[in-house]
Image 1 (tube, rainbow, N blue to C red):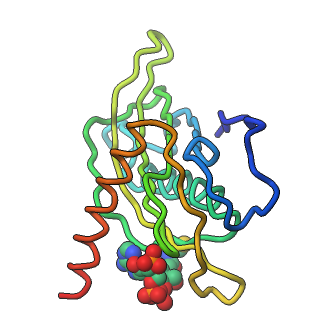
Image 2: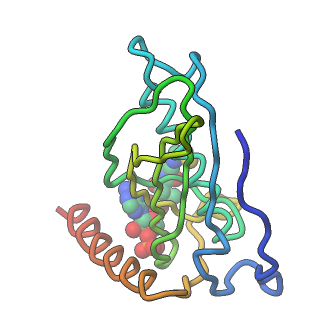
Length: 172
Ligand SMILES: CC(C)(COP(=O)(O)OP(=O)(O)OC[C@H]1O[C@@H](n2cnc3c(N)ncnc32)[C@H](O)[C@@H]1OP(=O)(O)O)[C@@H](O)C(=O)NCCC(=O)NCCS
């Protein structure tokens, strides 16, 4: 596994726990080469392995944003669009869509990449909720997310709507 992200120099280290920050600060990218040990009987990447990578990249992204521990609370939407074969590269990209009170929505995309042609295809799209926790494993406040583009604003709005639906479902 490798880590593609380099520090940008834009990190705010003054008050690390609650300073508002943009999604670029916590964006997380991991690359993996698909070996036989990652594959199922069809020679394709095993879904459980891909989900573990998604959870790991999403968790690191959430913990970068919150500057501390965070746990996976739920996975809303996880679609396997296309598969990965042995010898393909998996690129796992996680970014914060929205930060709420103690939770945040993180979107993770997994791209397949051919080493021969360098073409990429979308394999998985997933949205997850992480909750920041303190030393007693109690939820703690998360830093606000600052939109850095119009696309970020649209992502935050859509994430807020999904959160409303999520909360309504939990009340039922
Ligand atoms: C997630 C967890 C910390 C929430 O604790 P809790 O005492 O129920 O917290 P609250 O009810 O006060 O909710 C805290 C936040 O979590 C969110 N939340 C709780 N359960 C959730 C769920 N199933 N889906 C989405 N969000 C959830 C709430 O909406 C709230 O968000 P907000 O503060 O932004 O409004 C707790 O349920 C837990 O520890 N679960 C196990 C996590 C785990 O083991 N994950 C796998 C390994 S990392």
